Length: 110
Length: 260
Image 1 (spheres, rainbow over the protein chains, first blue to last red):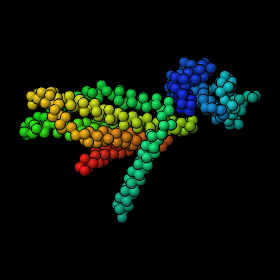
Image 2: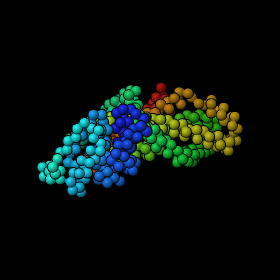
Image 3: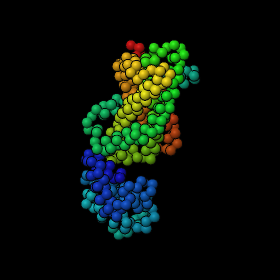
Image 4: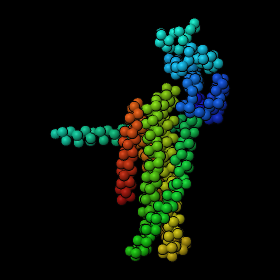
């Protein structure tokens, strides 16, 4: 529910309203079941999605992902990352991913 | 020469630390009086903090205050009877036990339980980078983390100290009946005659000041931790030593205030 803190704090909205927003955002990524889990009990994919949702909770979000494979190192390609971004594409204005040149093959043809 | 240098360095560092603490305290007090500080997220943290410090502790605190209070009252009343100072028992009960010992025991209890927890929590948050994350998301650390804990310290100390005093007065009623054979009417009459309004106000102000500093100092020391895990025990031990020093200083200052 750390995701809910961002709209709750920035927009001074009641807790339940902020939690609703966060829960709906998690549902989009089919992760509603992790709503009350804490960081150490999340899988790498879940943690990446939580980081992503937390980042897009601000108004007019510009997302910059620095080396996503550092968070989810076992992924063979970037399909999961782009699918997650696609599911919530109305939450942010633009998204930039930065990574090392030698990781280019993991991203394939973009 | 080397010794003088060390004494000088210690003096300069201590003065700098005290000045920093007061400057930080001024900033926090200023924020406490700004309506914008009290947003939804802050209020949620405040309620949680009051629950952790004042409500969760209640069963243990009540048991400790009943046992300790009864013991204290029993010993003091027995001693007064042996010395033939029965007439002064009201003054001793109100002037010493209720207004002096009650805030002191409460502050020791809360310091051992909550201040150490706050100090560790802050240091761990700093080491884990959680403070930095909050700042990245434009969440004001002072408003969101610090002010709720400090207000909680003030509220909890005042309430728990009052509760401790009530327990002491009730045990006093019981012991005055057992030891002196005193009726409830006489007891309440003596108690009301011995109660000094200014002493009670000073005692409550002292509780609020205790509450402020036993949360502010651990927070400050916790935030001084570096990004290494080894800095956590250093921050916690330094913070706790400073808290106990502050408690003694406040206690002495309140005694000095009473003299004038």
